[in-house]
Amino acid sequence: MGIPDLTQDTVQSVPDAEPEARVLVCPAYGSKESRRHWHDTLEEEVPFAEEALAEHLEPRQLEQLTRLHPGGAARFWGATATHDNAMAKVRTGDVALFTGRKKVLAVGEVGAVFANGGFADALWPPAPGGKSWRTVYSLRDFVPADVPYEVLAGLIGYSRTYGFPGQLVLEGDRARAVVEGLGITTRTLLERLGVEEPPPTEPVAATRRAELERQHTPTVSFDRAAATTLYRREEQPLVMEFCATLATPAGRFHSPVGPCDIYLEGPDGVEVIEAKSRTGHAYVREALSQLLDYAPHSPLPADRLAVLVPGPLDERELSLLHRYGVDCIHRTSPGAFQRIPAPDHRRRRMRELWTTG
Image (cartoon, rainbow, N blue to C red):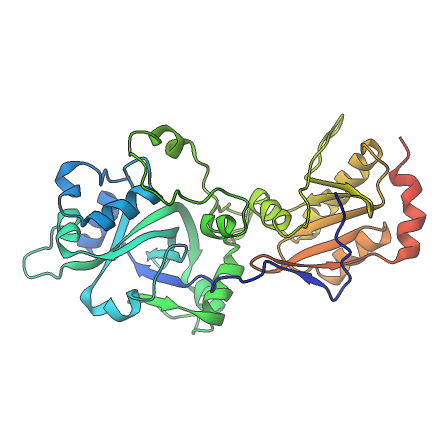
């Protein structure tokens, strides 16, 4: 396996990338009715394959749902006819932020999207004089969150006092700012990069894969950071996304001090990479110490060490890595990464220490 030769100005990416995800901002916990909908179709999965609901679905809608949710159940949300034009843009893999109580309460990944008033009314019977939800979408993943409105508003350039009173569909730079700012990696992106198996092209019987569906670990993952309200991309999706950009498969090795995240070997040399989900000093320092601990146990002597992070490092953290001859590889956009290499003389000086058993 070869090591990609990346310089500071070189970015590796996946060719022919699809358009980036949109972001839906969905008021979901304001009124008594919306709170009831939340409890009915977001807190628990809904068995859409059962006759009482399936009879309202067109064959192609049931097929799409079964393909994306082979367990025969999914979480659902929707929108009224007022939002038809905006919802017509929404597709599988877009990100949904569910808001209420002056914060983002949960983050989801859009699955199947379709217009079906009968199915919507079966899920959410309208109150007397109330509006039906015409557009329905399932959620491939759904993760609790705790992001104050002012944080979300700041990401998209709104006033920090903005109250998000209605549904929004964000595109382009604003959507990208939210996805990057909250550190979101969707399952759809990982499938497009080839690191997760995409849904089957043919519908799968709901009973056949119910157990597998329950065991799936969500790839839109968030973690409450200590003393902050920021959310972070988990290391595993970051590693998988990076490895999808490599020309040859990556491996790992297990040492007496633990397993490394990425191990590459080939005619261009040997590299050991440690990934971290955040860019703060404590995380970079931990990655550095792990690399220095793993490197002497590398199956072949390491020619290069690197830390993989979800965004650019500040100068202090980058200098720390370079002082020990360690490169930095950071994510620049979905499927794209940039390497900032350590000075060659530092790498040569440190290599003897890396390879001393």
